[in-house]
Amino acid sequence: MSVDSIQIAETAPADAPEALVRWVAGVAELTQPDEIYWCDGSEAERDRLYQQMVDAGTLIKLNPDKRPNSYLARSTPSDVARVESRTFICSEREQDAGPTNNWAEPSQMKQTLATFFDGCMRGRTMYVVPFSMGPLGGNISKLGIEITDSPYVVVNMRIMTRMGAEPLAHIGAGEYWVPAVHSVGYPLVDINGNRRPDVPWPCNDEKYITHFPETREIWSFGSGYGGNALLGKKCYALRIASVLARDEGWLAEHMLILKITGPDDRTYHLTAAFPSACGKTNLAMLRPTIPGWKVETIGDDIAWMRPGADGRLYAINPEAGFFGVAPGTSEATNPTALHALDHDTIFTNVALTDDGDIWWEGMTDEPPAHLIDWQGNDWTPDSPTKAAHPNSRFTVRADQASSIADEWEDPAGVPIDVILFGGRRAHNVPLITETYDWRQGVFVGATVSSEQTAAAEGAVGSLRRDPFAMLPFCGYNMADYWAHWLRVGETLGEHAPRVFQVNWFRKDDDGRFLWPGFGDNARAIEWALRRVNGEVDADDSLNGRLPRREDLNLDGLDLTDEQLDELFALDPAAWAAEADLTEEYFAQFGDRLPAALTEELEALRRRIAEAS
Ligand code: OXD
Ligand code: MN
Image (spheres, rainbow, N blue to C red):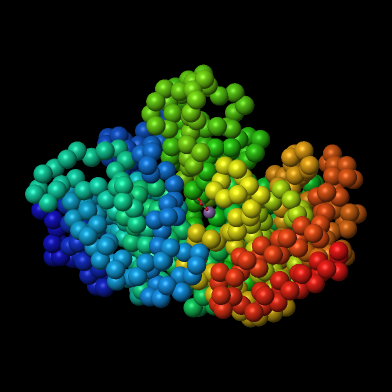
């Protein structure tokens, strides 16, 4: 028996507005759950769900002496990551999704979804999860409701967002909210009423992660994992929010946010966009190797930024937690992240130790002699497979990181001084360059790339473009998104943050990294901040302004002059080849490409010619 609309109205909290109750009733009518549960976000609710999932075999409670209040989930091997090939932007017109997104016609996609969602929650509880992206009530923050049939999603959303009764009260008071529907796509009862047992990680081979930018809705089917299922994160805070931001004059970005305090106690704020696998979480929790500098975390993945009354750009972290990649996190690489996970953490797809704790590749130099791997099998250091899945994750409240800044929940946000764009480039791109102006900054953001490795798709040595690190996350035509950035720059004028390009990954001819990275990245950031302060001059180059050697703090670093030269070398011939690739890349956007970016490419070519 599925619940009917009268029951829904009766179970809804008193402050749930009628439109919300009607929407919930409509989704319930379609998906036919056994029960509807409105989440209040309380600890009691969380603990009930944890217990229920432990009883069902979805979660393993870790040894409370080693890892209090922490749990391990193991997903099905077919459901271990975001699925970009199954992610769709369903705008009315294909050109509004643009050449970098998968597009589907909205009414057709709605029909397809209707068949998949029909009865998909039979035998299950449907959870109604009110949430806020950003501190409650802040003028940059926004609300949403995720309907899901996954209790794993509920407990993760409780960590990753402000979830429960409070956001519902704001929705009840008439604030704007985005509807998001999620199902793992594994009903427990078929159309004839036959029941089947549940499995620890229910999901479906068919997956649809769909976004409707005009009606601002999200529908996700078939996956219980990460960004496919925790719909506040990539689906809302990036894909739908980028559309809202375009229409409302702000920015929704795939950027970390840092607070930095200098030796003179002056504070700065910085955001930074990097493609995946460029150490974003490590930078978000950077421990500077140079004395006198302090770095604190405000966000590790997403920034929402809005011009403030004083004309400056203010950023909030719309999330409340970190959903970070576990492998590689260690006492050496990121002790702050490692210790944030000492308690109250959900781990997904990491290995289990014999004493009920967790482990992953890179956590310790020596792996334990025996583990249970992420698929539940015995594992020893001789096993040919990895103990933890390479995309295994931790979900943890942001304020469990000792590096969290006091103002991380300031609803007004923090004023941004510097924006960094980085890729993983073995060649060509110097450690740091300051762009000449916002417009060149947008060009640099638009052309962010990483070199393909043999393991990735595409030819070795070719560039994988990841503009603004937003390739899989921009909810509309990427060229229009660049135009929007140019417009925001005009609004900000002289108050615009200064834009820098960085590259921690340059290699020498023997393939060795030239720069130590990690805490030493503070040295490059220090130079950027000294530029902001007008303390140091810089030298013009074909790619922007370069540091003078004497202005870089290199004390204690073991770098030869030759290595430094290589770190900053700009080869005009290589840059000319890269400019050709950029022209080809831009061509796919046709006449949607802003003229300013064509002009920037021409300006780059002129600077290359001058340097040749
Ligand atoms: C993430 C990603 O998980 O960008 O943050 O893929
Ligand atoms: Mn990310």
